[in-house]
Length: 265
Image (cartoon, rainbow, N blue to C red; front, side):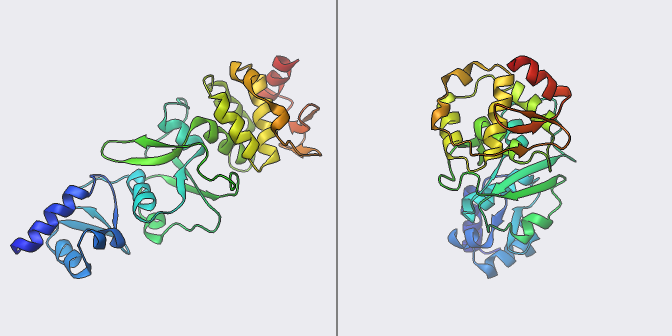
């Protein structure tokens, strides 16, 4: 390889974090245009994993390395949320993660994941949800998770548990939501307050408070619920359950639902 392309390659590799995907648009910004990228690929310096997406030769790239490219290179409003975000931050110890597990990603409405990300064999089940849950303040409750050589945006625990409850009962169970809430003893009341005020889902807000109070978390006492719009009417979380008259939601009359009733009595 000629010296100039080799020099460009060295600069490219210095700017390219190991373990991440590089998309064509980002490669061009680094000076690696299509013909040069083709030369790098032919010389086995990089490997194409899909249309317009590449990894460094010999690199092992996981889904988070692809998410890094979506966020930092393509500027897509997509983040790791729900149980995945809790797992990445040391919560949900009893829940499976890694190869063969499920990864929950959240995006703004009308945001599509590129084909290369959807179709690549990451070794996990991708669950992608688009929602207006925090449409008035999309970045509320997001934080950066530092990994080995790069960082990705994930939901802080306060937002992540609300995303879990958003998925109840279609993708997550009431029981699992309750078990996850039990472990969240150190949530920040200011952030919880902000998220409750801005959350657009009446079901999420009611279920969040029902479970938080049932767990007797100390931070609950620091919330000002008079500023939270809990809506009107009843909401059915599960069929055939009992009605919690405080939050007007139908919850299971067994398991965590029954324990919650005892704790809040």
